[in-house]
Image (cartoon, rainbow, N blue to C red):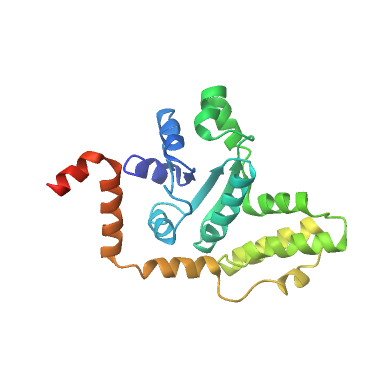
Length: 223
């Protein structure tokens, strides 16, 4: 992040990828507003930190089933934190690292330009699983998209997305509004739970990561 901080502020958005090789490849090719969570899921603490520098995020994951699920899993938490969020999926069997190797950075940039906002992304994913031309399928799709809209903290933004969804599905806004989840938001709860961790817990975890990263560190500790 020490290299990504200024580019994130300058471009006013952050690209989130899955792994450190993806980060290295993009930074080496001039795309420096890029970071990775370095774990299985994005945490509330990481989002709280990023929110200090930008409120716009591009999630960039593989287009295989694991990548799609990772995008959906992180999307709820990101939206709940108030980020304006887009999603970009690379072709199957590609991550940013090997895609740039094979097709070059300019082609990669063109793929980024095809990113979708979260509503289009979820609508597309759900339309592949459910028949939008049947009442049951349309209902299932609407409920799934509304699940993500529900976690958005800004009420005006939330209302605008409901309006867009109503237009795309050919439904009345009032009907969709009745299905918005007004209960406690999972993404927000997750963030609040992360805040309860003490500084000492974080320090201990970091120390363990450092010790596990190099055998010589263990030798220094034991001697």
